[in-house]
Image 1 (tube, each protein chain N blue to C red):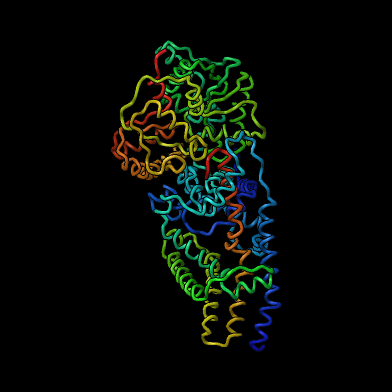
Image 2 (tube, rainbow over the protein chains, first blue to last red):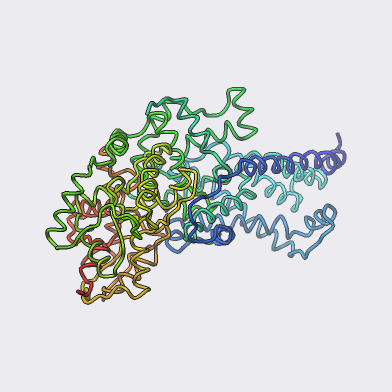
Length: 219
Length: 419
């Protein structure tokens, strides 16, 4: 297989396979959760479950001051790499072109120098986060294969993308093919690991806010 | 209550619903819940991280309710729940957790971890992995009617004392009363002043009330140990007494988990809504205040603070009411750091105080309350849960701190205008 053939395969059948697994996997996981249902609450409510649930979906993004103080590293590092990922994935011009092809919608891009710098910051933050996970007694205790796999498939597209952008070591088609394949690895792994939190977080926060709000407490 | 591993496993299976599945799917092992839990902050033991306490339930969810988990189970992959594992987790789930719910408030992905631990206890109790102290309390609650073994004659004796001391009549079994008062055994045995205080306030505000001789116990060991069947039976006794006396309202006393049991879990345990309303004593008192039916004469000059009982404020929704009431008589009230819904547990709720095995750790983690109190230098602390109160007194003594721990209802009664 030549490098052009590899790139064509990655962009064509490879991408289709990954997309099917990604979309069906996520749909399956969400269906698994939602279809279990939840018993209705027969106690007389003191507040609204629905509005409290919706508020918690947003409010839980920002910790209270005391919690921030206690978990400053986790919160700050978490913010940096999540925002970094968002910027790099959705605001890089070639990525926007890709989404335009796929979804027929488009939005403005950030200059590639900004994306470049953001990638570096995000990669460094993820490395620091891994070191912290290995050193912090609680995180090390809680961590399992899923945590390290999730970390690996997240940083890999960032690194391959960075290398492809700077054309280091190989020709452009090979580098881009490797980058696309690394994204596909992320997509295939995504539904079956903790990366699913990107979707289920909305359900979890809603349930938390609803359970608490029903009793008259905004959680 | 015959227990077996299979019963425990099935109980865990029954506990998994959409919320539990969403919670487990969302956990990213960030560890922030450890920083919210006094059993971790004061001991530094990673295994006491709240989400780790739910591991038995997580394994059941993963192996029974996810596609990958089910496939893995067929081929022998994945970590199974075993009897040995449950033995190992017993002290984490019962001795190192008061179900205070602080972790549920800070989890960034929104997991209600306290609810997950409460559900995990269902499997622990059914498989015979509950602490002996809590099993004893639960047996006494079922057979005698009180976790402390308090029988009706003991209550009658305390009522007779109160009536003799005050000249008031404490109404018992009055049909058609507006309110039926429940009491915790701790109040009956350790703080009978509470009965006197309620009598005085209700006389002052002209409230029609009664105690039911057939169901005066408010606490519910079934909730603490994690046995919904027993919890339902204990709730049903109150429901039956309320129906027999045709009361419109039932009052939950100064006890945290009693309020959770009768107010929030009760109707769901027995499977139908109540024919009466449940109010916490503080809700009722605040209601009387709003109606202008409480007149205070005394003012307390001492610097006072309020300890929020977890099940009443964070998990129960009674947060503003105590503060409104305290403002009626306190000139110098200060909040602790992290007040209200973010308050730190005293360290002895959720069955920990009935579990002698946890005596050492509950006093160790009291350091958190000490730190809160050290930051504000108060003359006294008010609370609204007799279980908190006993443990706060224990903790203060252990750490050589001197200050009175007051009941809000009693302090209010002391400062009422004489009528």
